[in-house]
Image 1 (cartoon, rainbow, N blue to C red):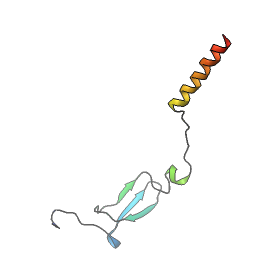
Image 2: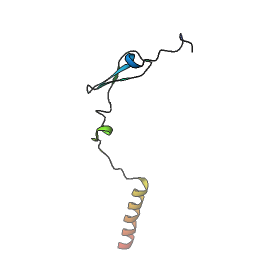
Image 3: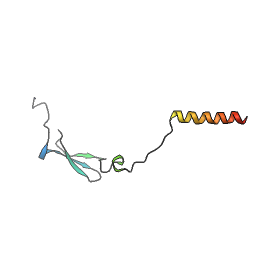
Image 4: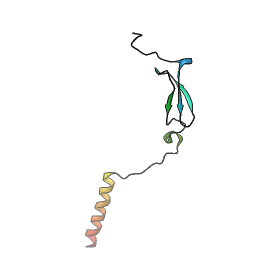
Length: 78
């Protein structure tokens, strides 16, 4: 490995510190020497915390079938 080309890999005591907006900090092995700042981490991300709002969106087929039911109902009424 060419040491003048490849960056050093920080592990163990030299591991990179990661800081989230929520205040949670942890360390990771990385080539980056300075602290990494995050907006979301596993402690505050909605998917991990269970506070995620699930939005149910009807697909194309459901919309088509509903439209066909309305058309059939109008044909029967006429």
